[in-house]
Length: 138
Image (cartoon, rainbow, N blue to C red):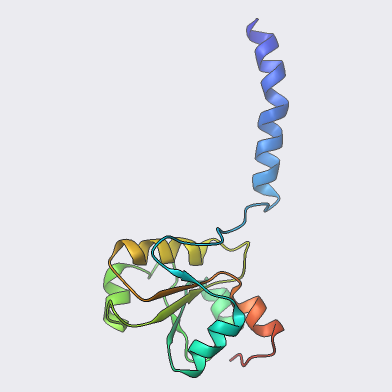
């Protein structure tokens, strides 16, 4: 019985692990407590001088970013203290990363909501969509 159960479960477990490895994970469409925005709205906020927070890796940051964005690498630098040092809890800020397959912006936005930041914009499409629209990159 035990071998039969293992035989039946093994293909399922392999399928599950392959889907994780292949990058099928996508970020959520929305984050509770934040406003999800598209590229057009991101550009509108950019033109108004809103703070863009880039939570990508140092390597990605060095390869290009939205002009004047603040770099707070999610795994090493992004925390309540570092974010509070740069913006008040009632200031508009847009958090982005590398698009829908990048989970950093959703994680960072969720954390910022939990820390009490009120005017958060979750830019799920991130830098790839920004570049595709022909908007400036530095």
